Image 1 (spheres, rainbow, N blue to C red):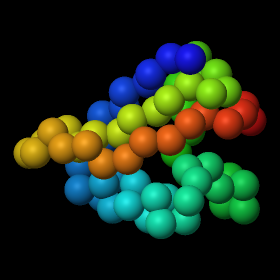
Image 2 (cartoon, rainbow, N blue to C red; image 1 turned 90 degrees about the horizontal axis):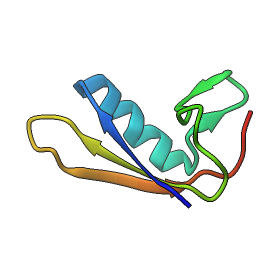
Image 3 (spheres, rainbow, N blue to C red; image 1 turned 135 degrees about the vertical axis):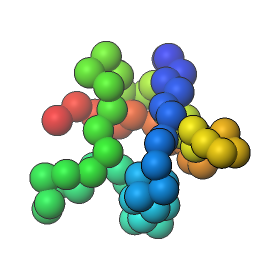
Image 4 (spheres, one colour; image 1 turned 90 degrees about the vertical axis):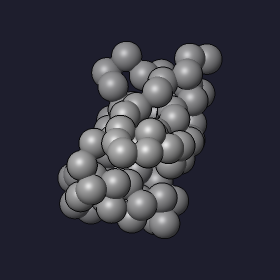
Length: 68
């Protein structure tokens, strides 16, 4: 298992991240969009998202569950 730390920049991206957290998953098949993991991510890796600025605050975490 790896820990993947992902920086989220810009207010609109933080708002989109909040929406996918409410939805419960980051990838959306219906819209062919969403938040994808880096190519090197493997199932069971832990992803952690944090806001870049101004607060550099933790926002969410989750496990990679598969590849598309």
